[in-house]
Image 1 (tube, rainbow, N blue to C red):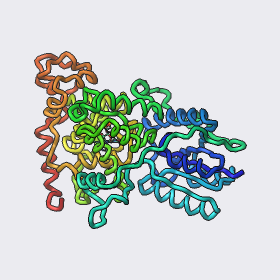
Image 2: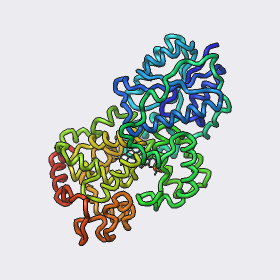
Image 3: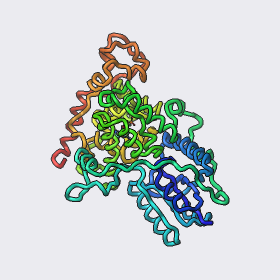
Length: 466
Ligand code: FAD
């Protein structure tokens, strides 16, 4: 009997998984597959923290499938070839997947669709990872959006997302299973040294972990979200980002779960942040190379400084600015950084240090467990001033004032920089003014006032065309 293949990608879940449901509706045995594709040109290799997450997420998905009488077949190689081979090996008559949105992956999928169709294999692609398809949200003139507020307003005039699909009760297995790679043979986890201890303590990858995280957020933090979301010392945000990046939960599930708590200003604010994710995907769909190229081409002439030891100091959390260093150490230890601190750290790199945003984007890509091509590129370009709807370049975050405003008691800094814990509140964000020694903590690598002037002078060189 022929089978249907379900190709899992950024949708490592069983509930609200339209491709899986379509395959079940086809009425044939189902072969669930995940392909580690590090060879297709233009498709970015996962960073180290994401590889850690992927290992456990695949493990969890396989365990869930096994409870339903199925399993996950793992293969490695260029997806185009691997999927073609797999379809031939198991005599597949249909292949289903959920859509992805960046150019390289879309082109790969289009090629695959053509070659599978030519062999008489039906291909079904579904919407699963966004609330709204990027081509369904347009300006009155039918164009793509470049500014978030009208984009989100337009989304809110569309019919609300349909209810999520339930997880299947059973996934029918083929007569015999195809050979797959053992997960351990992919070596996704770090060894010698194992640097993932802090990440392990902070996260539970997988669909169950995602559901628990959502329920915890809705019960404990949604109500105060608007006030607490900017305070890095408080667990005031959902921390759903890595689960969303791997598709262990869908935005539609989040939307409906939040809505069941009742319409409120807090719910609206939270959903509008999920809306920023939609906007980032809208941008990456309509703008090729968003992760590599300035959205505003006039920034191509920007006089970035050479990334030298200042980049290393930033990466290691040794800039001498406590809020920046605390964020970079949170990132290194847990694979995640609070949104407010991401903005401060990114501004410091691109403006105080005058280092090209792409250096920061790459570092975040490697170290974030929620690394997401669309969100990361949009976030970096927004801060650097070269993106769509970006913060104006001349708005340079002052790391001291930002620290004092959003970490007023210094709790966040004291947690991540215990060497400064003894400083009084008045000096916690400006240790160079402390009357007591700051021990091993480094001196400032730049003085913010002078660095700001240098950044604005650099901006003047491109301002006429910007
Ligand atoms: P919540 O406040 O609980 O928000 C819920 C969800 O909405 C998030 O999980 C996320 O999917 C989405 N969201 C919230 N804020 C944003 C935003 N500003 N842009 C896009 N989506 C948003 N987010 C990533 O998921 N991956 C990245 O690689 C990434 N890189 C970033 C780089 C920079 C320089 C900046 C400034 C931001 C970046 N962000 C990225 C956006 C944001 O910081 C994170 O999504 C957020 O901190 C995740 O925490 P949370 O899940 O608790 O967010």
